Image (cartoon, rainbow, N blue to C red; front, side, top):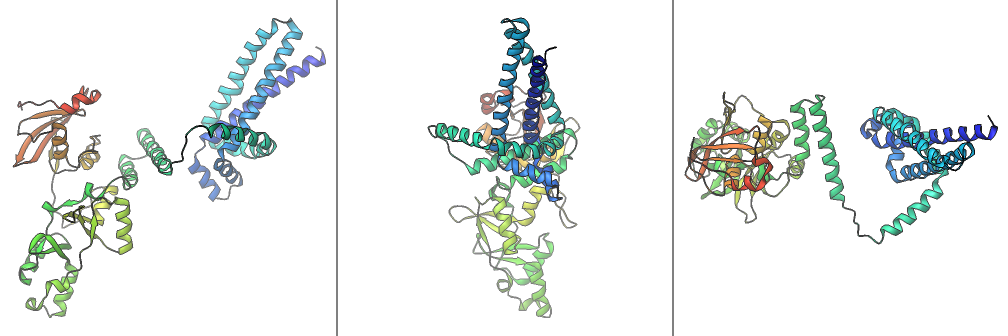
Length: 441
């Protein structure tokens, strides 16, 4: 075989190998877990440190990969055409195109990319030093192409939205958690906890606060003995104190402060001045996010705040425990009253109190009822039905069948819910919005 033919074949094989390397590098670096690479970097791995530097400026290594890959692919195709013409004449161009395309697809694209996806961290650590050199060598060409691209993009409207980038990162983390949970690597309870941390920035105080109708409060005009009796019956450590009207909160009584005052008065209840013991109330707007409120709790060393609306009216209260429960789930101690607000039945239905938050039901039953327009189950039913239903009425929306069990005045007290196997309304938002109603039980 003539030497020039051998050299052409060798050059084509070398170029295909180089193309495989570029594809291997691109896939390995982009698919590598940044968390694992960061952990290796923290352990002192110099290659991992180099990978982090490459990932910090992805446009550089991607530009080098594109330039190098395009160059070797075009050169391989040209040399293959030359070789084919030398061997079989002009018609060899057709043969060369088909053969080189097949070789590049199999050996330079599919095979290296598949391997890189399977061993992304190992590949990234291997190619990082070589890619660093290639980036320096191809730097001038890469920078020239970047200038041309930026000049073209200058004619198109584009903005950088930091909030969108943060949201994208959060969604990526949520997707990773969901994927690992489905695969069994993360327990469902742990997934709920991780999701709860991410939700703190999306939820507002109004979404989880204890509503004013459920608040336990003391009247400042009551005698010290009456208040002490109420404290003994209460399961709470901190209780708001009001004056003249329940909405006029003037203080927060801490049972520890009350015991200390009793000890200083030699346990003479008649000497107590409740208002001098009560701490000043702390009011926060209902639009505050849980993340900000948690930071304020930690900053002020406080554990309870009164929630007010835009008109300054008290709407409820929130505690540090309420926020923590959004992360770890229900926290109960030996003094908490056991209340079964969510009661699964043997027929597959679930009896739920109307005041149960949608988020709590979703977490407890692993459901996906929407909580964008309403906070509680009763609120969701009223929002979807667009009326205050009567006991016995049945509604179907979002893939769930809801039967009204009890109603107290204008408030839904209890609902029976069943998740439908093949919900027609789940695929038809308009139908779900109208909500089917009947009086059959």
